[in-house]
Amino acid sequence: MLGRAPVAFHPDLRAGRFIPPLSFGPRVVRMLGKLEPRPGPADPAVRVEQMQLSGPAGADPVQVRLIRPTQPESTRMPLVLWVHGGGLVSGSPVQDDLTSHTFARELHATVAAVRYRLAPEHPGPAAVEDAYAALHGLHERADELGLDTTRIAVAGASAGGGIAAALAQMAHDRGEVPIAFQLLVYPMLDDRTVIRRDHDTRGVRVWTPRSNRFGWTSYLGGPPGADHVPDYVVPARREDLTGLPPAWIGVGDLDLFHEEDLAYAERLRAAGVACQVHVVPGAFHGFDALFRRKPVSQAFLAAQVDALREAFTG
Image (cartoon, rainbow, N blue to C red; front, side):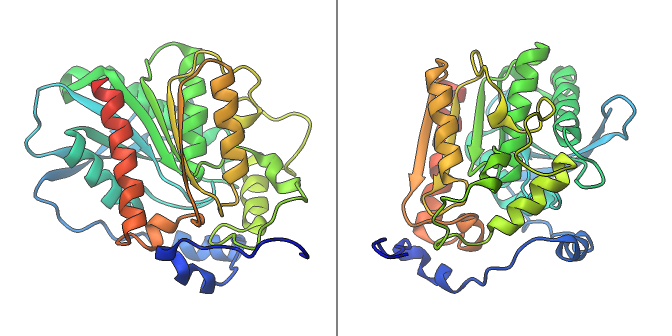
């Protein structure tokens, strides 16, 4: 500890100093599994509906939560396939209603928030296969839903950001659905962060190293950091990133995923993939969800909207 500068929280996020270092484990996940988040408040600018699509081979149908503007600007809307967070072991599309509403309202887009299978009952790449099934199903029904298949983005936060990154890789390889953009919000990309011992974690909040070990162990079905992992399970393990869609990666510099996210961005750029990086000084994991009304959180969401708008209108 000697010689290291003190941790500096963003002025809007000073209360984060008092967040206790709680970690995810089986008991917490069981408790969260019984608590379905409440839907976001009614928004007259959007309408919400549920849709069921064919699931991956041998799996149940996939549920998506469609959020659409009540008065779209045109008959063909861009699509944002949104993947929720939860450490690969918990979560629900409903938890991100406010973000989905914002995207639908501000971008005049259809947002499809997918419900995917969770670990440890369903190890990877089950979540990615579910997300791909939703993406493929929506693409097949583009005419019916009024979707512009040249303007499809995959997006997600935390574990959802990692799944979205893997989904972009899967879609690229299968060549069935064109992805125009990937929006990765403090994405969970690399299981090898678990085995690192050189991290300064004094400012880490919300998603702790212990939580990270539990999440990755559950999703991998074994210890993180193994020599080999299945395709599309750990996005950062993919060797060739050539040809992937342009990306936006946003993360705070106190986030446990900060270094792995910047490393992935650099590898994308080295592979010729345009990647914009948005780093929030003094911000920890999930700061925007916990302190949604703070200016720094509102600016972070606005940056995501701007990135998507540029991708859709570029």
